[in-house]
Structure formats: C-alpha cells, structure tokens
Image 1: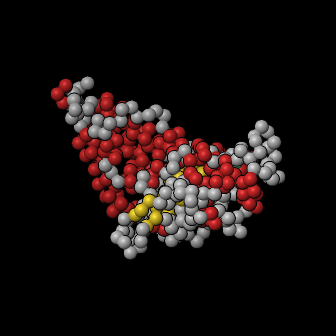
Image 2: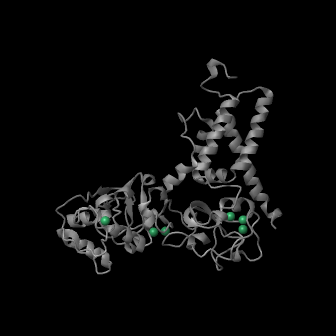
Image 3: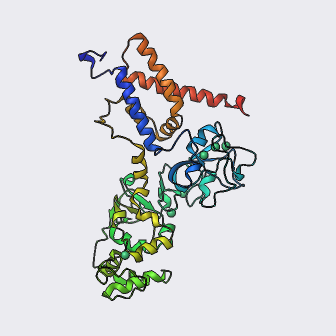
Length: 406
Ligand SMILES: [Zn+2]
Ligand SMILES: [Zn+2]
Ligand SMILES: [Zn+2]
Ligand SMILES: [Zn+2]
Ligand SMILES: [Zn+2]
Ligand SMILES: [Zn+2]
C-alpha cells in the first residue's frame, strides 16, 4: 500500500508485515501443535501429544522425574533451567504435584499427588540416547543430529543407531533397535515397507562412501525368516498361516475374510523376504497405513504396547499440522520477511524465539509501531535488525543473570 510500485520487490507495507506476523504465529503454533500457552493442560488428562518440558531447578537428577506442560513452563517455571523435551504422547502435566515438594502450580494447583499413567525416561533429567549424555553435550565435539524414536521417544545420536542414517531423514519415522526387538513382528514389516538399510561397503574405505542395499532381493537365503526363539507365540502362529491353513485360534474374526488372505502380516511372512535384524529402522511416510489391522494383528500391537502405531494421527507430522489453521499461502521465501528471518536463525534460536513468542510479539508490534508513526515502510532488513536486537538483549540478560538469582 504505502510502497510505491518500483519498491514493491524490496519493501513491504506494515499491513503486509502484520499479516505475516499472523503467519509466524501459525508457524509457532504448528511447532507447539496447538499446545495452549495460557492454560495448564492437566484438566485435559493424558494428552495424546503435547510439547513437554522438564525443570532441572524443581526436579533435578537424583529425585523423581517430572514433566510440565507448555503453559506451566512459562507461568510456573519462569527463569528456571528447563529441558525442552519436544513432544511426548499420553502425558499429564505434573507441575506442582507431589514431585515438586512445596512448589505450587499457579495455573492448576488442584492436581492429584501423581499421574500413574505417565512414562518417564532419562530425558526428564536432560539425558539422551544409549550413551546417556546431555544435549547439547559440552564434551562432544562431533557434530551429529539427534533423531527421536517414535516408540520410546528417546533421542539418539545418528552415530549410535547401529545403522547408517539415510538421507532426507526428516521425512521419515525411526524406531530404535531396542524398540524393534520389543515388538519383533516389526522386523517383518521392516523387510517389506521400511527404508532399505544402507550398508557401509567396507569399514576401511573412506567415510561417506556407501552402497545402498536394496533388500527387495527375493533370492536372499531364507534362513533369516526362521526367527529366533525370542519371538513371541503369536508370531510363530502367524508363520503358520503361510500355507493358508486356518490355524489361528485368536483369529476370532470369522467374517468375510478368506482363510489367510485378510492378514497382510501373514502374507509378508509367507513371502520369505527378510532383512538383518539389527540397527534402527527408518520408515517412509504413510508406512503406518501398510500395517495390518486384522483382529489378530491389533492384539499384537496392543500386547506390545504400541497400538498407537496403527493411528496415523499419532505422528509428529499430524500433530504439527494440527497446530496450523491454514496453509501458508504462496509462501515464497524473500516475500516473507518474518519467515525468512526466522529461517535464517539456527534451530536453537528458533526454539527460543518460539518459546518466548508472546513476549517477542509484543516487542515486535511496538517496534513496528515506530514505523507506522513515521509513515515508513518496513523492509526485511528492519525485521532482521529486530531479531538481532533481541539476541543482543538476551545475551545481556544472560550475563546479568547472576544478579537476579533468587
Ligand atoms: Zn501444566
Ligand atoms: Zn521449575
Ligand atoms: Zn504449573
Ligand atoms: Zn549417543
Ligand atoms: Zn525406541
Ligand atoms: Zn493381520
């Protein structure tokens, strides 16, 4: 509007920026999956998936682990040392319950003493992976990405997964080796629907040179199919369906399904295709839709405590989409000063900004007001300047922190 035609590419009007501010808000809520930043999530019970934090100030290592919701991280634990746990499923906010001693939740103090359905791990003390290290790790100089297992929800160093991490890993779901072995029937799916394992040609060979082994090779020796004795009973019975004999006692579902044609897992087993049962497994998008949900298989998932795998809306992707109310229309970078500024920051900075989003939004609006008052247009440069100021101020605050230590 204010911008004249010639400047249109380089500058944007205040109205544009305020609209894009809305987009930033949507992006932030996508990351936080619609988690409420005002209300404690406790009254909602065990939330299917939510952004979660642990407080090292209130519940440090040596005591009992506890997790708190997004709103409590802002309102009840401001200035505390928080571990960002990203998202976890089926969790109920612990803020102010028995694990916190005298400390009271400001948002929802009427909590039960404990949440018996919550699952905890070393993540709640800021430790991750099979190596049980903090992240970021001051003693670890090797750059390595952390990848979350979709079953145990722990985070693992790429180099500690027991396999070569495939490219475009962010588009895939990962199940760690330990979780694979707890639900051994997943190895059958791994041979059919997972991303084929990438094998290093030779350890002596230079790093980075890898060979992709396509596991579709039907001529592979079948001995891997006869699985170890650790396999559970049901799985052996599924094996029995290979010859289309209706042996499965559990297959109570006597409906229209043909003798064994109904069970995809049985079909996969019968095909004899297999893969080495070691290392983490990466799964392509929409792989969950390929899981068999016949009565027998549902029981397998339920008994192994992984029934959520049959639920497409359990994915982090579905959770992130839930937070977005609308798709970013024509989101071309460069025409989108707030988003491109945000994209230029590293992940830690992005998370900090999102965490402090409400404060920042107010400051950003104030900053933009000065442009409105002077009738000036806002350029992407101005927005970058704003973010830089924010960072400088934060550093100062961090340096001054010791004076305010309570
Ligand atoms: Zn809470
Ligand atoms: Zn705290
Ligand atoms: Zn609270
Ligand atoms: Zn590790
Ligand atoms: Zn796992
Ligand atoms: Zn089945």
